[in-house]
Amino acid sequence: MHKIEIYDTTLRDGAQSEDISLSLDDKCRIALKLDQLGVDFIEAGWPGANPKDESLFGKILALPITHARIIAFSSTCKPGQTPDKDRMIQALIKARPDGVTIFGKSWDTHVKGEGGLRCTLEENLRMIRDTIAYLKGFFPSVLFDAEHFFDGFRANREYALSALKAAVDGGADRVVLCDTNGGTLPSDISVIVSHLAEELNTPLGIHCHNDGELAVANTICAVQAGIDHVQGTINGVGERCGNANLCSIIPNLGLKLGLESIPLTHMKHLSEVSRFVDEIANLSHNKHQPYVGESAFAHKGGVHVSAVINDPATYEHITPELVGNQRRVLVSEQSGKSNILYKAREFNIDLSQDHTAATEIVKIIKDLENCGFQFEGADASLELLMKKSLGEHMRHFKLKGFRVNTERRTDDTDPMSEATIMIEVGGNVEHTAAMGNGPVNALDQALRKALQKFYPSIHEVQLLDYKVRVISSRQGTESVVRVLIESGDKKDHWNTVGVSSNILEASWMALVDSMDYKLYKDAKQGVLPER
Image (cartoon, rainbow, N blue to C red; front, side, top):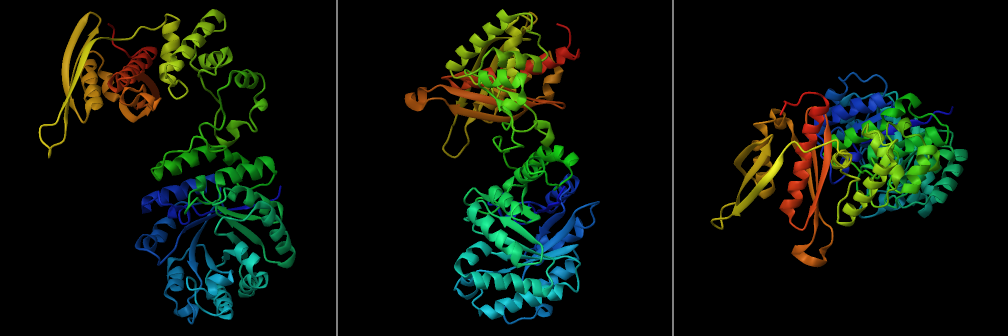
């Protein structure tokens, strides 16, 4: 199996995304995950460019990294300077990484133009050659990133090639072709890389940006044309539209092309690493991302589900577990009995002997979704609905009534919200009130306060996410809204839904299902107090 080197630049190029700011500890935690995944190079940062990267290398090189080589990034020396006098080059040496990547100009416009180096074409070639030759005396691995190479090749082929040859003359271990503007098409990548593979003896790499939404495709085409070193980021994060997404590149190389990048046994951690990076970067995970997204192997249409149950290959291009993902069957108005049977098995509910119940549940769900409910993102509400439909679950408390007041007394004070609630548990009535940061929070606090007297484990429940969607805006402020709530305790997390033209009522429905699901779980585990 042919080996393709994986060079991860999430910590440097990926951190240039406008939505990302990584602390030193964040970078160290991600570096450890990348090493465990099996990437070959981790581009950690640019020594001398900012205070954070100044201190980064001391911390990251002290980590128990067993496989990946830690790379520092920088530019060639400045026009008119020699590398030994250049402050940034000296910062590279001081950082003492395992290797370095130097970028230089290969597009003549960036050399002569007002926004570029503003030096002669010959001086730029001298800078590339001398910088690499100097650094070869300090590091076993020196890579050259040919910035804007494909634009430069189209504009002035001879000069773009001379930039690569200057790097080779300096002793570069690898020359990386950069589609910095992200506008090159796959067909052009294939032709140009094939030409260079014959022109140069030095190993080639590829570094693509995603401005044309082609970074992954361009990377794969470059590999097929002869490149064996690919650069990218986890989840494709990066400046502007991002970088080539390693979460798609790695499985495409290994599972589709039969090429080794990371060990196939490590690929099962890909989804975990994808979510980990988003979590550390405080980003919402893209559920529709290929291979590693939550929806990548989700099936909603009844015909699809029926087929997948019998033969997953009918609607899945790989086995989800190969990349650490899992098959999901969604339940909605497009569902059939197959969806319900699948979800029932997932919930350990046996409907195999009761087809009438499955048909009835399908009808209930379709009626509810016609009113605005959505169960594909609310498994907890769906499981409770199934249990209630089978007569196997009764809510652990009854609502006797609630009231929520919000008032603002002066222009320079925040509004105050108070909720009062009356519930009944086992014939006992509890009437309580609570203040909150807004009416929904007040209602949440009052419900918890009332329930904790009977069910102490309710204090473990945390509201993790709260989303409101106006289902149709035609009625203005009278529109029906859907509330989705994600809750969690020490062991699990779950999602519930509520729908109403009154946002408090919709919130109440989702909150009640959330608390009821916690008690339902406790009852199954035998830890619920007797009532």
